[in-house]
Length: 271
Ligand code: KIV
Image (cartoon, rainbow, N blue to C red; front, side, top):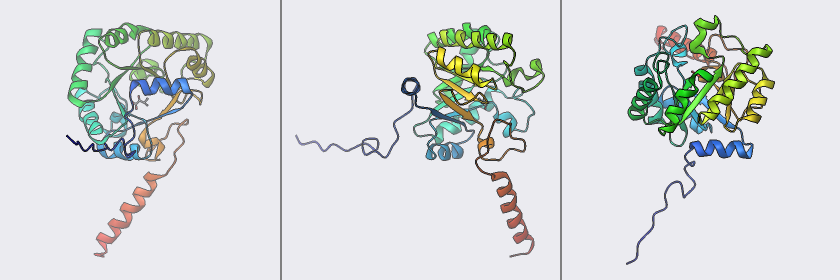
């Protein structure tokens, strides 16, 4: 019998190949920087993908940039599920990572597993991210051994802002730098798939990147990392206060105010 074979979209080259954990590992091996960006809804996921973003991180920064909190601490698992499911609906090929929110995983590896399973099953995302160094290594191992793709996050960890007292750079003195380096090794050895390095000196991030086998993702950690991540609002100039390390590539806040004011004037003039 003669069978007509229909080409898939991917075969026709219309669809980017799906990004996976293996893609991240291969990119590190080939020295190919990966682009991560936060996203919190389907529309922004589509825009980011059209712009060539590889990984969409549904950060608990959603609490600060979208929900109006002054830290990430009030964000709940339900908040993360709502936003992550929307991002998954908007993505085509990007790898989607969801932050485990404060209080949903620190109690025990079992608690972290229960929260991760709930998020993975209810959103369809690819990986979870959790904050913490050596003390979280047991949890990272527990999740990884059970088939979960875990992204670590060390350095300046926003969920510990009340403990640190600020969102400032970590690892500037020798002792703290050594302890962040030890954290990186512990999380990598526990089986994490990638590791976010937030607000640490560039030379420390470079040393970590060169010495752990997994991809590093820098935010305010210099340019040697295997990937870079920024918050959606910071890249687009939508934030009222952009962190010093984040270069805005547009000024959408000002443009939005100008556009909405022009429309408001037209409404008031009955134009
Ligand atoms: O919550 C977040 O957006 C993050 C990134 C800033 C790394 O964790």
